[in-house]
Image (cartoon, rainbow, N blue to C red; front, side, top):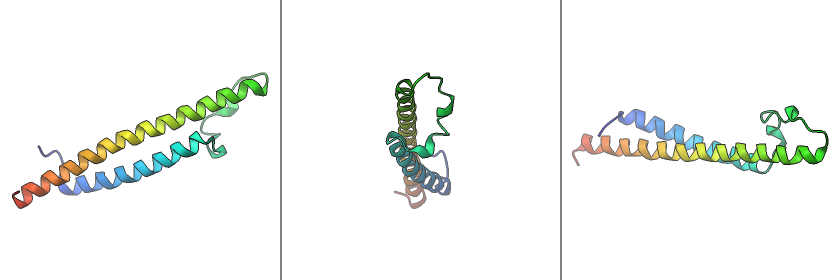
Length: 97
């Protein structure tokens, strides 16, 4: 069943491939506790009395964000598969396979 045209399928495939690469790299950086993402994780809002309470909460936020990136990458893998299926289906109909 055709849901989108061949050009839209190609566009969605390219965007999905780019998103998979980007989200996978972001997940790796977040899992390795890159300081670049400290502001995005709002680490300055952690209410603790000492550093021993701060680190576990910060590590938990980093790992949670990394897992969210990897889940989103998996969803984009599904989108890529669907887009490629639409491209192949459109091509078969166009050339009469």
